[in-house]
Image: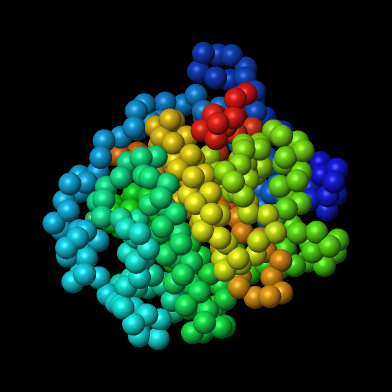
Length: 351
Ligand SMILES: [Zn+2]
């Protein structure tokens, strides 16, 4: 249904059922909910029956990865980090690498774009999900934003920026040593293009910001809203495009350059809270992403998206099946309202 405050945002869902005779001979109907994403328009399916399926690898938090103690072979561990990792171009830094607290930032040896960097949290080689310090994340975010500020100063057209994280190989991480990836380019990613267009159209049509309006609806309805960490507001995504998808919105802030040190600290606190929630449901792999378009005309507010990925453990199946890849409809098993209920205690909210 349309949002009462913002009718142009539609929170639509439909219920369907699959009917068949189950192995015991009973006629059954298995419900499936199909939600339409208010921003992207894409479908998201919630296949409730699969929540009862015995899935491998989630009875308990999986053990540490096999290379969790192989610090001498890790290019991100000290002392070899200074000889095994590249240094920044002199146009960006005269020191080769950037330091903020214990965070160390250097170029990505295997870049995905024109400005592609890695920001370590600290010298800890393996950190279990939910066990990192808030300050280590705050330092790494601040280091990333300082790097992006230098990129923008050096190349004002490289406005399409992203800070991402792949925690453990099941989420795409190639090294277990925790780190963020930072990217900036003159060319936009698909999500940059789509979100910027939507945010600007929305603002042009009614004068409101897209993500603030989405947030207002979610706070009013209160079904998926989780809580705050300082300036950031957290909620389970209405139409999830991955498992246990949670959004953090920093209202009315469009640019990384407007984010204060306190805001980065607040973001770090929320990210660790979500990691603690994921840990509580025995998940050890996740992705994080925060995009910005650094142009004065952008109406795209900052939003971090955090999702669970398949556990990194032997014989765990991928969370992306032929259904997601070939039909383009994400299928999850838990209603976002349930996700929010489970996550709230990690934000100090009692139901
Ligand atoms: Zn390491």
